[in-house]
Image 1 (cartoon, helix red, strand yellow):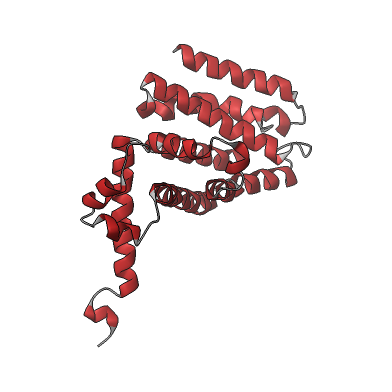
Image 2 (tube, rainbow, N blue to C red; image 1 turned 135 degrees about the horizontal axis):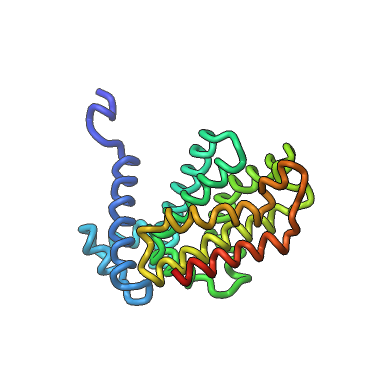
Length: 232
């Protein structure tokens, strides 16, 4: 009789237990905050002894990183698979913007808690969190490189700068919406901002007909849109 017929394999049982632990850790961190959350509380929520929990994770930081890893792995897979449905640069950037902002708002509190683990910038650049984020943004980088190769975006635009403009603008909008309690209306606000965001990364109607506005003008337009959103 095969292992499948007998039931779950040992590895499957371990994976299921780890999933239960991460679910418990996620809810505990959100309710208690990272500092006040305890391994004992997390163990209790997933019906483990505290000692049993330490067999899976060494400490709270390891648990937080595991929760964060799950978020980034799922987000990265969604970006890589979802982008294949679109052909034009605008369609791809539109998809990535909505995916990123929507998922980030869903886990905003958790992401803020995780960011406190690496207040020191040097430590952050050596962290798994940094590597997860770097892997995730490769999808955006590839879209920009392809857009430059086919002339949708000026070839002199640096990928790293455009990435900072794109995700920095989305983070700014997300923070504004969270502070105002408007996260559930993010699609409306994002769609208002996208034309200027496209312009900021060099993807404009004018570019398509050979007339390019300056980078400074594009940034000014984007900042004006964000200012308008704040005042709404």
